[in-house]
Length: 120
Image (tube, rainbow, N blue to C red; front, side, top):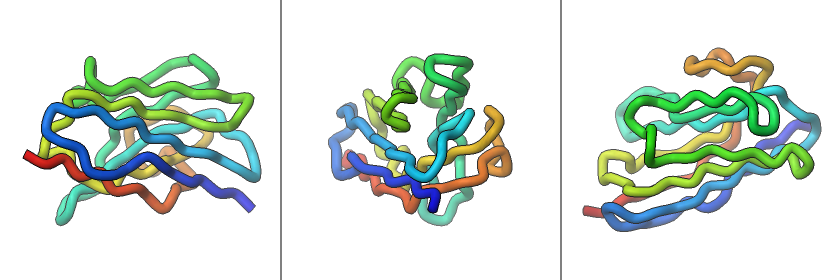
């Protein structure tokens, strides 16, 4: 059974930092990534990585502030977020699939999500 389990979410102040982790089990994936969904909005691509240190994509809005890393030996992916803004309050989802892309359809498996709340 394939599972993606996120951890590390929680409350953080405006301008603060937070590190999310996602542990995959059941199989390995070419690509892992992160999306987020704010209340009343669609699921938004944040970042994705292929392989262990391979090609990486970032949403323009997070470039320079967020960093994705992957430990293929542990089948985990991490998202280091800094300079967080209140408008980035959302449920953050881990995703995994065969190709690196910005569309949710590029990913076959999803975690349950972890809440990140940035207070002003």
